[in-house]
Length: 102
Image: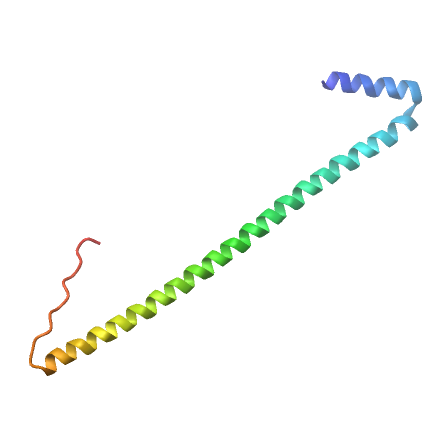
C-alpha cells in the first residue's frame, strides 16, 4: 500500500509539479490533525466525565459513611441509656460478646 501511495505521489508531482501536490498534502495534513484533535477532545471529555462521576461517587460514599456513623453513635447512646435503666432497676446489664469472626 505504501508503495502505491509513493508511486501516486511521484506520478502526480511528475505530471503537474509540486504546485499540484502541495495543496493535496496540506489538505491531508489538516484532515489528519483535525481528526487527531477531535479524538483528543473526545478523550478529554470522557476523562472529565469519568472524573466527575468519581467525585460524585466519593461524595455519596462519604455521606453514607457519615450517616452510618451518626446512627452508630445514636445506637450506642441508646444502649447506654438502657443499661443505666437496668442498673437503676437493680439488674445487671448483659455485656455484648466480642465478635471474633473479624
